[in-house]
Amino acid sequence: MPIDSAVTPHLPELVRFRHEMHQHPELMYDLPETSKRVAAALRAAGADEVHEGLGKTGVVAVIRGKKNGAGRSIGLRADMDALPVREITGKPYASKNEGRMHACGHDGHTTMLLGAAMGLADTRDFDGTVNLIFQPAEEGGAGADAMIQDGLFKRFPVNEVYGMHNRPGLPLGQFALRPGSMMASADTFTIELDGVGGHAAQPHTTTDTMPVMAALIQALQTIVARNVDPIQSAVVSVTMVHGGDAFNVIPPVVKLCGTVRTLDESVRDLVEARLHTLAGGIASAFGAKARVAYHRSYPVLVNHAENTEFAARAAEAVVGAGQVDRNLPPTMGSEDFAFMLKAVPGAYINIGNGDSAGIHHPDYDFNDEAIAWGASYWMSLARGRLPLKA
Ligand SMILES: [Zn+2]
Ligand SMILES: [Zn+2]
Image 1 (spheres, protein in one colour):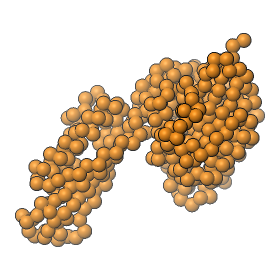
Image 2: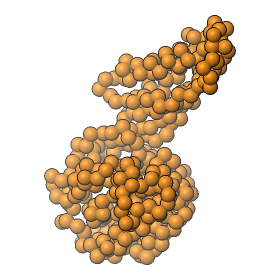
Image 3: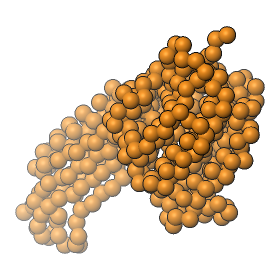
Image 4: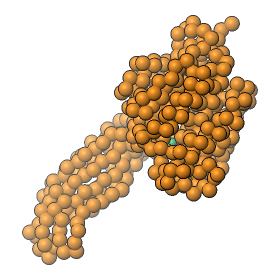
């Protein structure tokens, strides 16, 4: 079964919707136009219920099948936010919002799920309820968590939840995923080193935090090299260093910031603990003090094994066996669908975007030809997980 026959008639309209959304990118939770446009399109598609304002600007549509025998429901999720990137594609439908761009393809994700809404509302050939979840603020704002905190799964309970992201470099008409950890946790840290400032010509009268900072940056690399099991994965990157304003003044405070990525929650705990120990220990060895602020952001994205197989089969039903990679290597990028997978079993899949620029690149564009494959996958998954029995 290639492209779903319930999706095909909607394709021209879906491409128009994608281009329209691409022209009007909005950031984080600030999605007034986008969420309004999505909600209107879902109502026009014939969704039974459309709810706005979940997690500030999230939208949920409810579509009920022909029967509700088993009373089961599944959640399908897309993201709607863009990025602060200046577009250089030169496409006729390029961004009209200066300095903002759909550089991660969330316009495509929203469109594919809208396509599924149209097809599911037209056919209703499933038993149960499909909740279509459109979230804000995937790009660093934890919009998925905001929707959950706002009662997403209490008001719209689901037995399973699924997410999808496009992947440049993966051919069109192909899908890829893996069971278990697929994307990393993403945490941030800020370490302020307090010493005693003074004249640069009289360092002995100061507690200079510069050598403390240098020693600490080196030592932080030993967490990955010497503490984490070599078979496991972790990243500790110091990405900002701030301190000092003059050639001849030793500053009293130096600040460093960075990010920690892991593919396992116990590794995450270990890295956080070692970071505190090293900062405190090294600062005190030099007579300085360390103040550490460690912020846990997106968790590890863990695909549930059973649901990964359901998702792979649903994709295979559309694109054929051999077109679905079940053993995609994990990446140290992160994705806030991880919050949903912590709340409900499910799986996250990548869909091929063909030979495009990478995501977040100013020349990136979602591939319109992926819309049919993605919407068909959603249809296949909904029918497969909520089968109508004769
Ligand atoms: Zn992104
Ligand atoms: Zn993205």
